[in-house]
Length: 121
Image 1 (cartoon, rainbow, N blue to C red):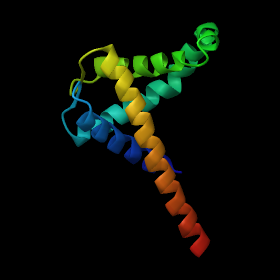
Image 2 (image 1 turned 30 degrees about the vertical axis):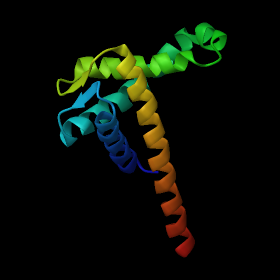
Image 3 (image 1 turned 90 degrees about the vertical axis):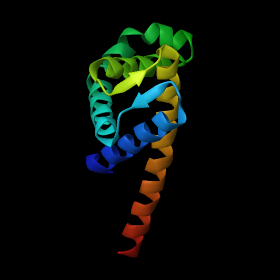
Image 4 (image 1 turned 135 degrees about the vertical axis):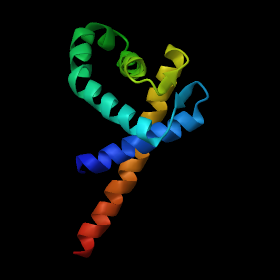
């Protein structure tokens, strides 16, 4: 799946999650796009380092600490972007869970439509 489609899916997921969760606020679609880009960059650059540093805790908690790392990425995004607001860390945790679920659903829908298009060729 190309990066533009993934960025669109992430932007939609940010908008939907902010609509569903009362502790999360996004000013509009442009802000959601910026949130998706910043979150993607943080997940690309910072998340692997945090995962390696917290490996013992992650193993001890059977991987549940990865949820905390995801919430930290979202919380850091909140600190970097003005139009994106989280009430507290718990809303960041819920936001990261909801956005992951929405992205999974949308990516599976986009993947199945790509398979149908390639089968028709």
